[in-house]
Length: 203
Figure 1 (cartoon, rainbow, N blue to C red):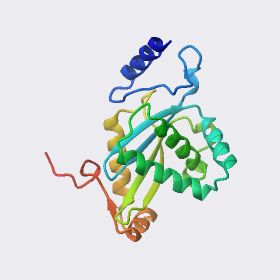
Figure 2: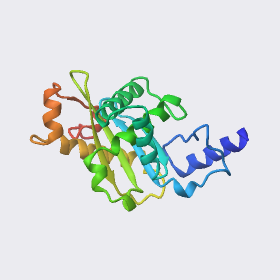
Figure 3: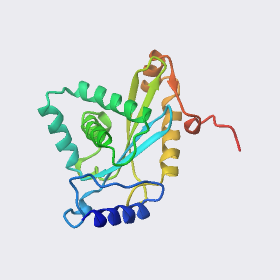
Figure 4: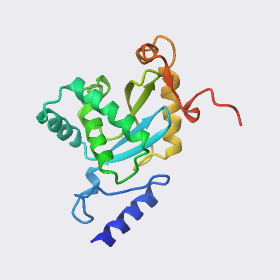
């Protein structure tokens, strides 16, 4: 069974260039319907460009929301916990297969359900690509920003496409007058990795 799982992970990795693919421990090849895993969820820490990605079924949003509600967490507490989780995971550069990374994705999925971005996407259109972008302020706070986008890829979009999307979002968010820019100003400004800055030097 372990060899089958490794083979499956290698095959999935071949279909998702640039990503290391790991199955969660409770998933086994031959015992899951991969066709249901149509949601792609990406985490990016803009301060150091740490990135992680996960696939889940669309009903995973409701399941994550129920789990945090059962744990007694309010929507605000979930949003805060998701931001803190990304900050901690990126600090130690958590990789595929990390148990805490799986927990972080659960928190982010739950946090997304309380955002205006999530509510603006009709339930039958939520299969797609969700980016949860975390800004780190100079005061050590974390401000997260959800984005939903379409991409031609059936699987994960490439890391290059994801970084380009993140650069565009960051350039928009840092313009004076946006709600994100206002929050970041109160946080002493945002820490932005050079590769995510729209002011990168020309090559």
